[in-house]
Amino acid sequence: MICRSDGTVIIQMAPIRSFIAAKLPVAVQLAISGLQKQLADRDLDVRWTAAGNIHLTLKFLGLIDESRIADIAAVLAEAAGGFSPLQLAAKGVGVFPSPERARVIWVGLAGHLAELAALQGFLAKRLAAIGFPQENRPFTGHLTLGRVKKRMPPSRVRAALDAGPEFSSEAFVVDRMVLFKSDLRPTGAVYTELHQAPLSPSTCPEPAARAPVSF
Image (cartoon, rainbow, N blue to C red):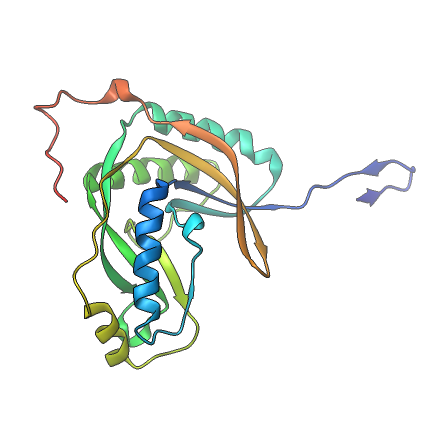
């Protein structure tokens, strides 16, 4: 709140920490939660993401003013209108940036990855045009399992990731993008949906023209 010299009061809303993502089905989140429990038993010092918060991030926006939501929603509508729903599955486990400097434990993706990259690239380009800079590194679709609390021996990280069979979830469909608000609390992040943009089934190519899904 700002009080002017003439006595008027201006209410300023706190900036919103926000990102754009695709939601996961509960069944996939539960499968990933089971994987987290397996990895936790392998001596990894990691702060695990709550299963209900696991999502596919398409663009982290950072702190935004509430007034920008309409602009972002317009970009989402434009992007969603040009892309059809995607078939994906969670598959494989890895770390960013490397076992020697592990900071993030992630699950990879399989399925319509080229289409996912095209959607994310289009979205990032349009958002850059309204003031949200593109990242310098290329987009790598993944699901964050957790963040490493402190540096661990690379051998421990590799052993934990290599133990057991390769992880793979059931297939799922990404049919919309969601703008989320993120509230960081001592008990963990709380995500609130601000806007949804359904992808357009009308843009689907004929079945014979679309590449087969491989999981």
